[in-house]
Every structure is written in structure tokens, then in C-alpha cells.
Amino acid sequence: MGVPFEALLPYAIITGMFAFSAVAVGSLREMQNGGKKARRGLDAWDRQMMERDRRLTGFARGQTDKPFAPPGFELNNPWRVEDRFF
Image (cartoon, rainbow, N blue to C red; front, top):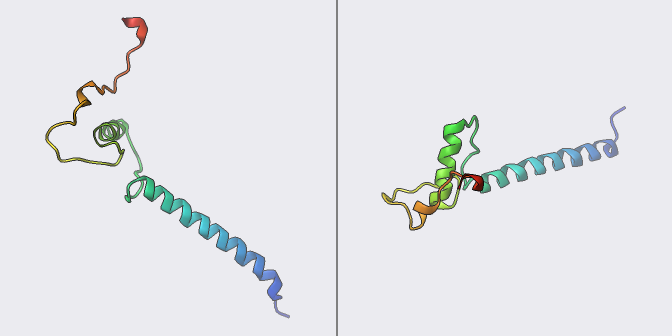
């Protein structure tokens, strides 16, 4: 005797929902990275360069070929100093 159709329908719905959520999360991550794949295995240098790119372009994955920094970048210092030192 075969498996009734009604028993397979919930499994198909659950599998479809898992597939939909995986595709949705993957496309959201790709949109957040500017259409690029997510970076893996970041070290301190990569994080520092991503912070620099974010300060230059406003986007962590953005890059620019301009030879000069935008106005105001000279005051946009990433190093934070505590107030008690001044």
C-alpha cells in the first residue's frame, strides 16, 4: 500500500518554507554587501580596510579611485581618545 497524498503535503510545505527562507536570507545578505558575496575569514587588516572604505565612501564594501579624500575626511579620525587624557 502506498503512502497517502495527505501525508506528503505537509513535508512539501515545510521544505518549501525552508527553501524560501534560505533564498531570502541569502539575497538580503547580498543586497547588504552591495551585490557582492559575503566576506569570510576577516582578520584585523581586513576590518581596518573596511572601516577606511566606509569612512571614504559611506559603504563598507565601497571603493573609490579618487586620489584625494573627500572634504571633512581629515577630521574623521577613527581613533577614539578618552576625555580623561585631555
